[in-house]
Amino acid sequence: MAIIIRLDRVLADRKMQLGELAEQVGITIVNLSNLKTGKVKAIRFSTLNEICRVLNCQPGDIMEYEYSENDYKLLEGPSLE
Image (cartoon, rainbow, N blue to C red; front, side, top):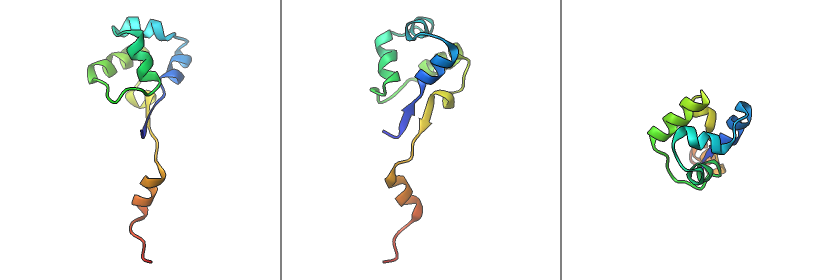
């Protein structure tokens, strides 16, 4: 997966526990834990909105795109060999 969830970093910066965030966002700690560990394939914008509201952050603070080796090959273009 190319999208990396950095929720643990933001939680640590805010000195907040996962359970506290789950309660304030209104989702289960299991669902939030699955998001934190990257075990989910999607997130609702309404959930992302609430997480950002509670943590006072931007979506880019908790999500990051990680380039793969394949991405770099695509950027280089076709080989002339």
